[in-house]
Length: 564
Image (cartoon, rainbow, N blue to C red; front, side):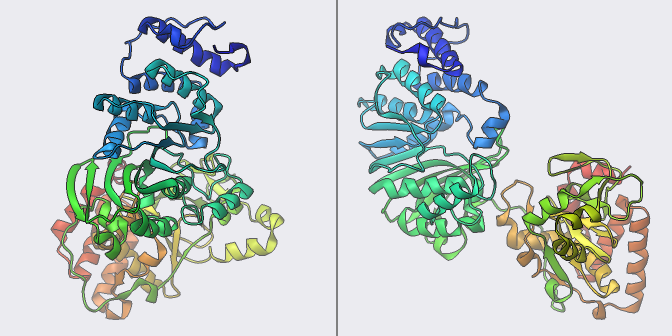
């Protein structure tokens, strides 16, 4: 019997929904007599366990604010995804001990139970479910009671933080852990908590890795030799530098036998690309199955490739690229200019001193990532969101900056002097524009400077060219985890081949100046294309194929901006 008087209002609401559902399903006796009135059920009556979990899971989700869900990194798992992952996990196996350490509404436990029923097995044998959220654990109890008749006080469902308790040895861990960056103070991850987790999970949770990495390490460590781990994870774990140690460890300890790339539309609130992984604990594999959802592709990949190249280069879908040939008389960009990207702390330091400009021409306008397009910036013409605040004309107050920390203010402002190029870090093509001295390039923009203004202009033209985008994607496209295409990193950008200024003929120099001046005076598509074609000719690249490819990649909203 449920002691409904001890339940909080949210739990009572879930119970009322469950009671209404139990009545129409003819299973009211499974929840026992309670002092809560059933909420009449008028929708389709779920029959399969996963569908019951879906109904009550969404009822629970509706009781949480969207911001609360995002803050915790927890999102409801669709039943079909749970069924597919459970089918992969149980393929050719009969695990006796199964754990979901982040059970939510119990959809994975239900998926395993459904599969066992089809085999004629006990659906609940050896199943355990944990969740740190009391409402989630309570919802799982109601789901399993309605779906399988599990007693509501069964101790196999626990309210606990899986990252703070000892995990039992199991044959299968199947879960959708929370996605929370270790570098962010959300999801309850304060500095002390992050330090504790880094000590306990030194492989999966280091630097700026995602909290999901700690669950991967915990899951593998608790799985017996010959067992499996099946998870829904952020696709970024396939590529980020912070997760490199985890991937190296998994290659030797629990290599993947299946990876399915799911795209970014399964969890609308999360706005993150996801993937499912099936890992084989202590079992050598010769190949693994790689499937991509959008566009749909499927192939078998030799496992040895994960040792010979970064996982991301092997797994993440490559971008279709035009053919390019790097000229011989070029030098790395790092030899021609200085590249810099500020620290995250600098972002907040600057943000605290940003205010709305009182005039259309303030001494220190601030340009952010959202204001940078190829060949132009939109300061004063497009609103900018910086540190959660919207501005029409964001400007820096140097006095406010110096009042907080004069030495740091001087250091940061010293990097903002003179004409520079600024580059957005994530985009469909390389987005680069020129800014004058005094304009503040807000982190995470990459800044590029040179003591030679002619050299800087030549670099600008080459970065705007389709060749630069094609070159970067051909070598570093696998780093992208946003779906945009270009995920710009300073060390990678530093290698980009550039024609140096001394190698340019005088007639070409004059023409370059003319075209760059025209672009600065009127940053339209005609002027941008003129600069791009000049740079392609300079690099000995075919115009038509590269120009068509680049402009087709450019988002429509950017194209509209050039036609204004």
